[in-house]
Length: 337
Image: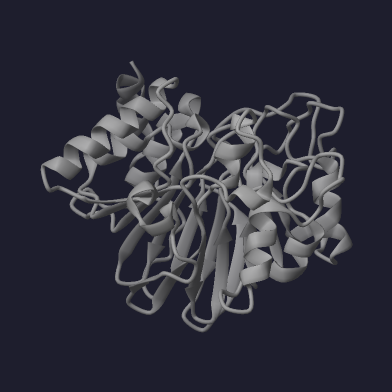
């Protein structure tokens, strides 16, 4: 049924191209798949990177965006699955069955309880065993960790791994019984660099407790402590954990020192939280440089009220684009197509 819906949507909209300017520019699209994360990047070359594949209920939107950006006869150089939550895996099997994917990087944590994870797992395994792709599973690496600073180079672009684990380090003090926090804390974080500019992709990394008892903690503290060797400073940050208050700690924001912030939120969990947004505002980021994929959302309570409306938010209407030119000019904007 989902594939049929995708085909119907494609018939009407595939001829409308995304605003990718092509040429010697980097173009990233953060897709509004609801309360999940899907991003597609075209690097000069061209090379194609997908970081997370969207919410399971909005997977068709991630599929559609990829088909608009990645030509049918092209391959995807790298697919990164930041962690095992299904709101980051929705279109994984469809992407792998549509495009040749050269390499997958994933945490390797196991989630047999979710259909979305199982579909992704079996598709990756089948293609790995047939020699169709390279599967980088952190569970198989020394210390079950992506070495911070590990770098993949694509022409003039560099992709640097900042964090990523199969299990959170014991000194983070995350209880085995708090599986949700464990799954989020191990998120693979990357810093994409082109023309002297950088974008930070953070998955669902965590850095504080909701009550603020621990601030600058767990994943974010690990990255801040490593920042002298693996820089964090980035012009654009795709904010961790959809703008939850258990991420975006003050020390992390200071280390990243972004000029633009993007919250991949959606109508669920009251994201982005007002307290998390306030920490970016307190850092000096202008309101007009803070973006959210859930414009109009109005869950009330602890959610950020800016941009809400009486009608609420629906999926698919608030994609966000990042464009970096060869001379280092950065543009962040809501997609108009």
